[in-house]
Length: 184
Image (tube, rainbow, N blue to C red; front, side):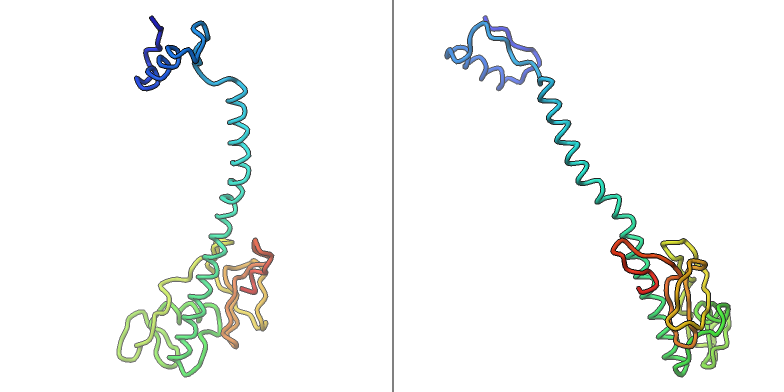
């Protein structure tokens, strides 16, 4: 009688029995009971090669997500500044960072004066519920400048020129594609 491993599936045992009965396998040949050390090493090496190809792509995904979020935040800020200008006789918010913050987050009248509550006079805005954080440096402060175009130095979240209504990320450096952050 042939000895069968107890834990082998019935279909596998059946094939092995038929092969032995047909004389395809020598009666005294040892049964294969697992993987050899070489087979396991080959699998480990192949998995290591695949991991070395895939993992750098995942580590760069976090930085790419921050850069895309930065672009989206800038697009949103710029859109809201354009809406403010359209409702205030082509006058940009400002001229100080405190004025910009108040005019963008509170209700305003046609002259740009602010109020915490809406009324028939203060019928515009708010344009932002809060100033978004710069996803690269995690700052939500705004610095006003007269530079045109503004140039980032990394001291605040955003750099704003009230004369030209330009707003940029206040960052000094480049992204993963070697594009300057202050050129977004």
